[in-house]
Image (tube, rainbow, N blue to C red; front, side, top):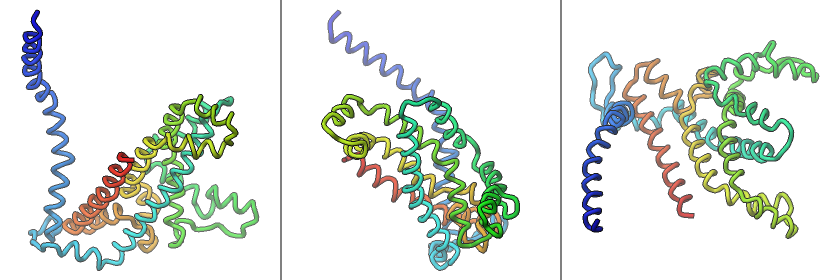
Amino acid sequence: MPKRLLLGEEDMKRKCTEPAAILFMLPAGLIYVSVVVFPVFYSLYLSFFTGSGINSWTYCGMQNYVNMFHDSIFRTSLINSVLWLFLSLVVTTAISLMLAVILNKRFAGRTFFRGLFYMPSVIALIAVAIIWRWIYHPTFGFINEMLKQLGAKSGQAWLSNPKAALFACFAASQWQAIGQPMILFLAGLQNVPEDVLEAARIDGAGNVRRFFSITLPLLRDTLVVVISTLMIGSLKVFDIIVGLTNGGPNNSSQVLASYMYSQTFAYNHWGYGSAIACFMVAIMLLITIPYIRFSSKN
């Protein structure tokens, strides 16, 4: 059969299958537009108005965005979110990578420990918050009981101390947060060629030198995925804060997501809450997109 005729048949098949593919994708596309695209643009629209959702809406231009930076609680929320982001990038990445390196070695029971460390990541964050409220309990919580056995005179009110509340929430979140990055790092470590590591060992390179010179550079793609997901997850952290402190005491542990929620649904400041939500989306895009593009070029 002539080659030109075969190419013509392939073009006809492609033209016939394209409308069918579009029809199959249409329901998913409509759902995506309905639950993702439309709410984002509707929130952007609401951010230019003041109103409670019951009374009439009043156009206010950029006033909601101006009010954000004159709001001391918003500034506290922004600082806390940035601090949470920094701690996640440093602490969560370091702990999950360290666990992945350890659990990548061959020893008895490593499958059990992999499952043990990954298990908390499938628990809902609000359930994690309930568990850690008991652990942090000032009278009979596990941490204070342990400190009492070590000689501490009185229990610490971890969640009632404005200086400690945010860090207590972050520490509780780590129990649930390290599982997924650990699994991603494990997958990346298993793709590191053993012969390259063995050649470096024969050449006299120690464990630390092999890790920083060979293993870590080969984990670059995995690091991009882990750091990107941690960035997004850190900026939208919500459940653990609401479940443990609800932003208290005295708004000391508020983050952007929890403050946006309280303004929108607790105080019915829908326009102001929408402005905070749009600010959060803008921050996520400004942080993650340049990072991913820069990482993909290197």
